[in-house]
Image (tube, one colour):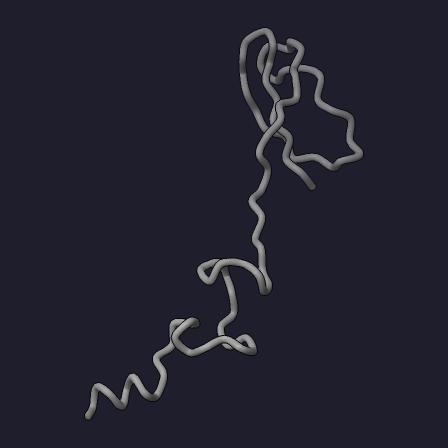
Length: 84
């Protein structure tokens, strides 16, 4: 269920209402009983998952064709260079 944001046209009181999409919009202010207007809001953010996004965006490491250095993992050659 979405959360709708309203603002009273008379007193300026802003409030949120958690209601189903099929519910009728709120028409009166809970404080002064004036008329309210439903506001447009940004809503929730999106989380993109899957190949094709930046490496810092929730990407799983170890995709086929991805090198160990690209995924942020140290390869065995890097560890061997430090010990030699």
